[in-house]
Length: 178
Image (tube, rainbow, N blue to C red; front, side):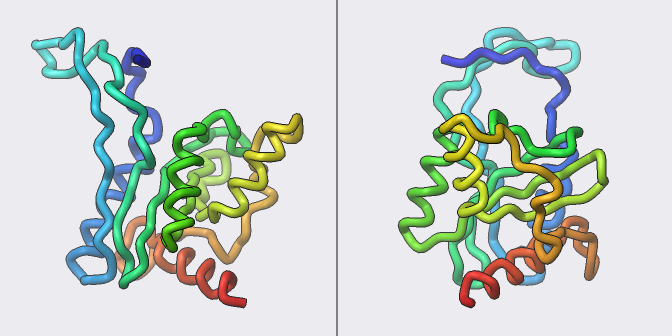
């Protein structure tokens, strides 16, 4: 079992933006996407603040989000980095396995990454993630560089949505059909 000590919920800002966006998508009947809870068993609780200070993960989680976008099943993980690249070590084997299985069932899998150094977010399609992941496993580059981001998959604030990732997803789907 993996243990954790809380260090302020890394990536929490990105996930909160995604959660708020997903609530708006649901309200406007654009998508039904939910956060997948990570099962945690607390071992120490700060009763004064009402927070878990020490615990362990009951089992490995899959991805951060799963749902349906206008009839298309989707799953994705949210990653945040202060570097000029996304370290492959931030993408776990069980996440890759889940996304690959999801793709084999005709779903769409991807990662949403926020590069805080550039203050930009991107959708990275599973195929690209898998190429970098497999290459790293064979001794290649250990990160996905910012320079490799597809500008068509940049995620911006638009139409009242804080992180309007459906536009990037739509661009990816268009490219995939070509």
